[in-house]
Image (cartoon, rainbow, N blue to C red; front, side, top):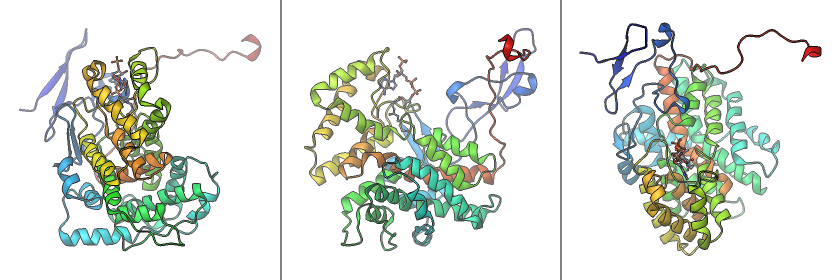
Length: 427
Ligand code: CMC
């Protein structure tokens, strides 16, 4: 028998609310018909609200589990690569060898951007934050690919998905090259996704660039570990924008904007800025003390998570990659990296962090790896955006291909009641 919840409100008959069960995870109380009874639910920050149903990613925050289409992130990180993960997120199954080869081919043949996109960069200052540029140029793609903007057409949606996944690294590398005043590097189809990105970032036309396989593998892992995280702030933003019927390039630009904040994707950059501010191992305890002080707004960046109250499973894989990369590149003597390790050690043992279950999250270690492999700090959140693009598109596509309503939350109004306009002379 279908389960129901009874909502009792003083002076009224109880209101029956259906209870829905997913394939796993907690049941949810369906409040969608409550408005017809004259009530809204109130849930700032959506801490208790499921905004949609989705078959893409499952997180159990208490157990520290993250599954993409049922596969644990640890197994994917160990055995798969970023493009295979993109395929899995988009189409629901792991590809066969032929499907994977076809997918890789298609992505690598969409990596170039329209030549006129290059002109957009000239409108930005050389010191512009690359996330500001990304929001602009990804949104601008809407004006270049009119042949894939019909969101009701599955083929159009698919072509847009390929274009976005393929062009993100090209645009990301262009941001960096523009900041340096170096020539943009055209993509190379003989390289894999991560290698091609590194080539466009660090190569120059006047000499040969050899991709370091350790760095390429670490980069691919960073993309993989960021690929999706169910209804996080930026993905919810993409869904909300998409629910209006906006085109996919505009929706992904809105996701990039939401990701930029330091509470979300901006945290990896904030971690390195915080390490700069701390400056020396001798000052770690002073900053840990500040993080615990209720009257001080300072927080330890890269610690804590809305959903994971045990351990972020991505952080576990990222830490392993971090150790490998630091070891193999022989940079574990870097003072800033040593400072990060000391901070991790102190916070993991401190009762405040232990009791509140504030563990290092994915951004703590990704920031350290990105620094070690030479990605400039201002580009860190762009790396997150590149990795998260398949997740954003998979969610957008899942929504558009099913039945959905425009996202339109309500509010608890706390302003003035109706009053009459006062002429200026009487105010
Ligand atoms: N340093 C010090 N105290 C913290 C921290 C921190 N990093 N994070 C949370 N707390 C405390 C907070 O003060 C609160 O204490 P109390 O209960 O005494 O008021 C308690 O822990 C719960 O915090 P909250 O802000 O209610 O938790 P939330 O779920 O709303 O926030 C968070 C989650 C990630 C925004 C927060 O932990 C944070 O600001 N962390 C630092 C930023 C960061 O690393 N963000 C990246 C998240 S992972 C990547 C991603 O998915 O985007």
